[in-house]
Amino acid sequence: MTYRLAPDYPWPAAAADVASAVAWTKEKIRDYGGDPNRIFLMGHSAGASHVGSYLARAAVPVVVGAILVSGTYDLRPQIEVAGQKSYFGADTELWRERSSLNGLAQSKLPLLVVRGEIDVPYYIDQAETLKTAMCANNHCQTFAVLKGHSHMSEIYSVNTEDTTLTDTILAFVKGLK
Image 1: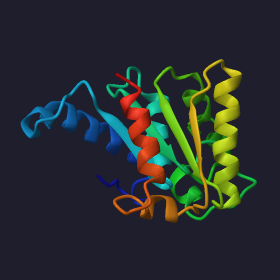
Image 2: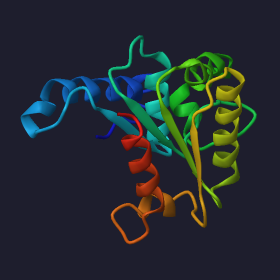
Image 3: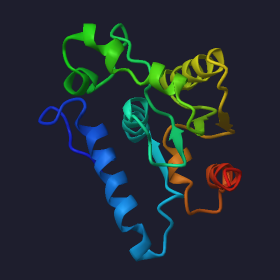
């Protein structure tokens, strides 16, 4: 799936798009041989941010678990990131409540949080911040660092001979029976 883009569609449009995709999948997946009770979400980079935003605010997520790969979870106005003000708003006073960090840290939904070993320092910090917040809430999740991978190589490795990410995802999914 994809999502609507800022500035035409600011926060929380992308999380609403994730919610719509989940609802559609829940309703239609049987038509394609799937199980509506075994839906997982996955996002990379901005996609992980939007999946995280959806999960942080969903009253009762209808998914079994989620895979968050190198996303933004803790919005910090002092760090300039392209597109953040366009999507999350120029009023950075609102960013704390728009951040998914606290909602994810309190969620009991199984999460796999992934980052590349040589990811952009910003995303390494985001993953480590999320890990720390989850563990502080006695809810340490599955966390993986992909050896030798960067922000883009981790996702480009899907459907190649490099199964570092896909093996990690498969183990996580199989472990939630």
